[in-house]
Image (cartoon, rainbow, N blue to C red):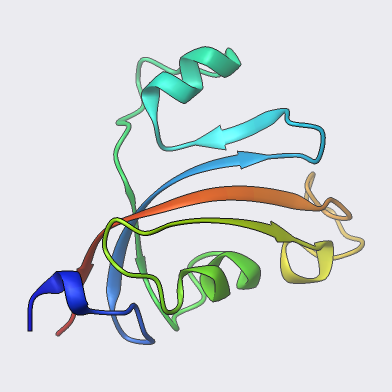
Length: 112
């Protein structure tokens, strides 16, 4: 089975490019250098490459992980994540209480 036929599932290591925005369009984070430059967030010390996530390990916020499940290589998806599936409705995290929007592009899936 080629990686083109795989759908991301728990236990897979996936590689995903993303642009994170607040409702209204302000970018707060991205893995893509061009997008970071457009948004005025460019950090020359950062290595802009797809985010690597092992699904099912809680390495990213729950809504982000849920959005990755079932994606195929080269698939793009846009998701809106409510606070309860992000950083919580309340709390010390600066993103607590915020709804987040992500544009995702799956670049690779590794299954062991």
